[in-house]
Length: 217
Image (tube, rainbow, N blue to C red; front, top):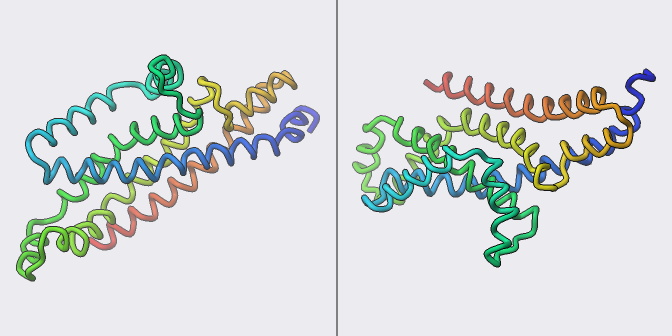
């Protein structure tokens, strides 16, 4: 027990860091999901120029490491006169970054529906908006739910990068405790356990949704 005394004494601080991690991840997921939906719809129903712009954005963003984008916003944007609060700057970057991945998840979910579903909706006299909201979206979201949940788990893990730009969360809290206790092994085991608990819960939920999707087919 003496070996893990630093972890026992600092676990409340780690839990506060985990709470900040969840807050940051939750604040990023909402705009990332909305942007991902818009990008998916733009790729499917947009014109040639809008499709080309969205596809270019997705490939460029997915080809750049998240840490580079975080560093760009944190250090370079103030030089241009744009000075965002650190928390919201990180949320903006992570939302824009993961929207590129979520767009492909939602696009795949929509395109995976059989043509008969579209034809049946048209046969009922629905316009495009009614067709999407009543028939297409509910089924597409059901199919996209498992990979979407896995992306949310990846987003939680990606929040560990924001400590590099000085934003406080679980990884930063762990480093602060290590500086005081000189016990990196014990502290980072505790931090890893908290990350595992958060991501494992989401992963299990994703497996549950995947089973529901397979059962529905």
